[in-house]
Image 1 (tube, one colour):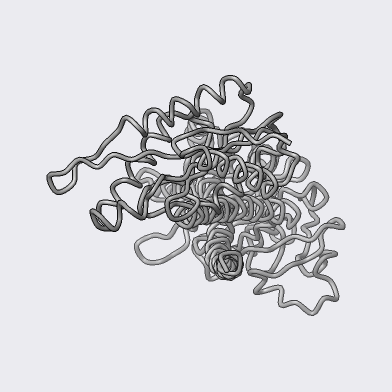
Image 2 (cartoon, rainbow, N blue to C red):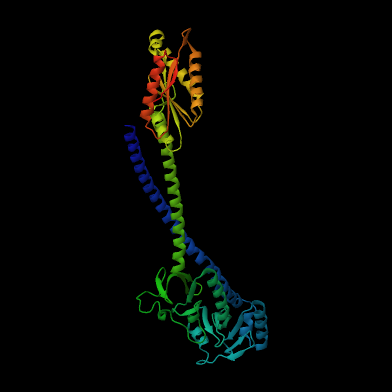
Length: 471
């Protein structure tokens, strides 16, 4: 019956473990998804945040310098009055030396362009295209590429007098090679490529070597291999996946309203997936560890509970001694490690008379006292149990016969010398002992039967005796 009870407990534990695992998997899955989403956002943010710094440093800062240059109060009179070009060239050269940028002034009335590197030339329509294209534009601030052989990105700002008449165009230029060097450092650190695209979808700046502007030819976004004939809207590529140099990349768009440009950030999916896979693996490992710890804790708890149950059903409630169930299990354990055993059956003499004379409560106290005395005689690794009624069994292992005989005699004498006080009266009692020696490979029932035979001999000899079974 107890085994059936434990079987039911095992089944309950299995169901509980399965439910717990499902709950843990559900919670872990939810946490893992949240962590992956968070990691994805973090990766995206980690990629984009430095880009803003790059844009500010490489594009917006020169643009701001150009607009500040255009607002210089001493420049207006210089553009309106016929002046010596050398005065302007001197001022421009001083600014170039201080800020490491190319400065220029294009005079409308004189139709002459002066640059901080000392060059000057006439603005002739049909020969100098950028200036006359700028005149046709209704924009005040423009960006264009120029200077064949050493291509610069120029930021142009129109200058007007108080009546709205155009005085000229001023601005700053920055070498494309300077951008390329900064882009290479960014790519080495973060592993991303990018393209700056103007309002006509020309790729003005990029970290991709095969698309960088080296002359008058400016790459067109629609001709990009990963976009050509794909049907994608090149004006809105945010969150699109395209193939670039035989690798899939995720496109993220950042607007640059000051120039009406777009920055296309190209994130390699391999590295992104690797990071997300790593995040998932970490969460899976944590979840597995948590499940293992949880199941281990549950199993250990069940084992402890099982032992508690086994202990509770293997203990005699009255005396606190082990009962016959424990003795049987203990004997099975000794089969694997003991070399010899001594089984002792102890029976209280005339116990019925104690109950009849003093009552069952007094009899219970006699049983309890007997248990204490017998336990005190044994080693910690030996066993005494209440077999039933007034009968006890002692299980001793790996002790020579003469020492077993000595132990049994001392136990018998201790019982005979002991008395208990009950209801103002002394109750004395004795016990008869029968024991048999053998090997743990023998059947317990056989040793018990032999010890019973010896116990009968003790009673036959007048009780309060100890006899050994002999063939």
